[in-house]
Image (tube, rainbow, N blue to C red; front, side, top):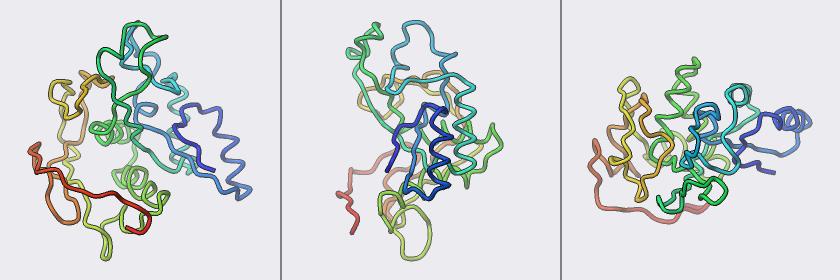
Length: 212
């Protein structure tokens, strides 16, 4: 069993009990549940709408405890972009989703370092564990025999999220105005540099499967 998009800490004791009984269960959470809180959502700010919803700060604290003790295995993007039109001012009808692909790493690293967690923890949660879960044995680590996929990160550099500067096609974001730690200076795919300080190379890639 795999539990996706875990946002509620109420599930953690049940998951921990199942793991203690050696039930085959894995669990993921997402950057928005781990970095955004219900208390900071302004009235009518539908850019924060997602399913399941953003919850309270105390709930978020418990999710981080679940990451620390291994109850939650990994963090995934749950990238769910939306046009401005679909994010209407009405919460009932607005699209439910948050774009976290470009900002997920700095958002998580910003919160992780605030909580005393290491960059190694973030790598395990966001790279090693997801690759293992997906059965992609050539991904998830920098070592001999693996694909040379990695991001070069300046962990101390900061930036303030400006929607106009996002690479997402649809630039609605719940992170607008937040100052985040962690600037990716270059990105590498199988040993080839595909992005360098914001300059992208020609798109390249191929479909991954468990044998790839």
